[in-house]
Length: 290
Ligand code: NAP
Image (cartoon, rainbow, N blue to C red; front, side, top):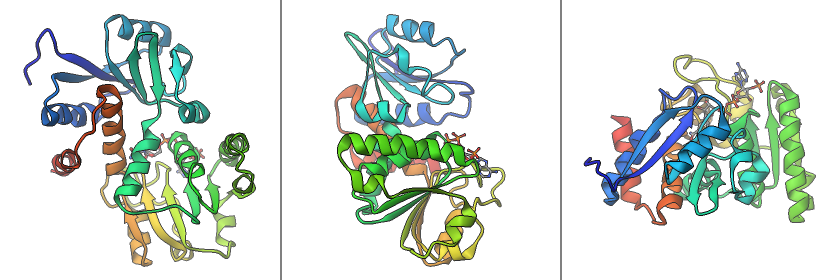
């Protein structure tokens, strides 16, 4: 990497930020596609007004936003793309003449991963385990598809209810009344009593995340027999307990690594108005698995 006076700067703000893989991914992309850019981490102190003004004044062309600022940054933006506005979280800011515009590429990244794996959510019963920020993004992605139903299962039911409320509001605004009636919130225990199967299940809790790799948010075999496709958003470890149970019951299982890579790729494409070739995604994955 040859940084010079013309090098474009991209970066990520969050706190903590030490664990982020984004600089690794973005700097590989820049090298692979031949764009003179550098991507750096910024540990941000929570002062959203000055952070946004400072980055803008310095001409930082693209910023990723991570925990705990994905919602807090929104009032500082000139404009927020529609789905990100509905979710109430952005992870990507693009520099424009008027100010930063916000996007949510967590949704775009997961969508791209599903397309890549040939997974269609049409007419599927979707189960979402968890009701944090990631679960909310997954729920909105599913609500934009022709799914049959969405069931949100969480330890704290009030958080699942809050996602359901936002989803129903979104679906009513889109005129999709039938799906609005098929959004359910329940406990893992209640899910057990449900008859239907063929689930596409998204594991969106922190349970099973390294180093507590032996944990799983649902351990019941009867649940996994109903899961045809299980996507764990966790990517460390590469094969979680959830994935193991899905596969042992005959389903297909995926981890969250490609979703992470694709959300970065989608941000990069928004900032640079280019299409990142699939070979570059493969290259990043290879390097991350080393
Ligand atoms: P978050 O907002 O903190 O939400 C955490 C969720 O996990 C909540 O639903 C929480 O339940 C649940 N949970 C935590 N400990 C639990 C336990 N012991 N038993 C049952 N439920 C428990 O986190 P997030 O941002 O949504 O992230 C969730 C996971 O997704 C993380 O592991 C993160 O690494 C992963 N992720 C991956 C990507 C990717 O690109 N692959 C992107 C985003 C996130 P309560 O509501 O009851 O507390």
